[in-house]
Image 1 (cartoon, rainbow, N blue to C red):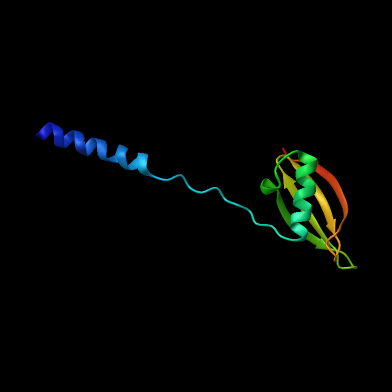
Image 2: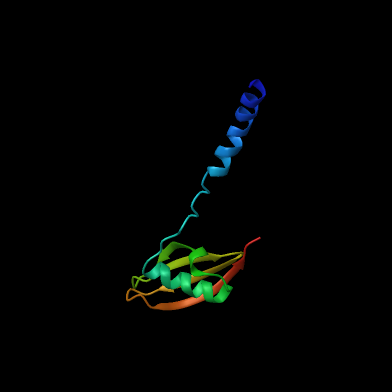
Length: 96
């Protein structure tokens, strides 16, 4: 009986670890202008738009927003006009 108790105590952490859930992957939600930049960066990099990080960096006098999009090891600059149209998209750097 004593051996069975020791084995049960030793097996308990393994059983609990096997039942533990994997953490859910983080899903980035982007909308509107950010999505337009993410899609352009995804096309340029060959990656899925869901893994592209888009950050607003500046705005223009006409109200357009300038974004930096990072996809994998590449960075892009994207300008989105007030109406949501991408007016400029350029590769800016390879991230190392």
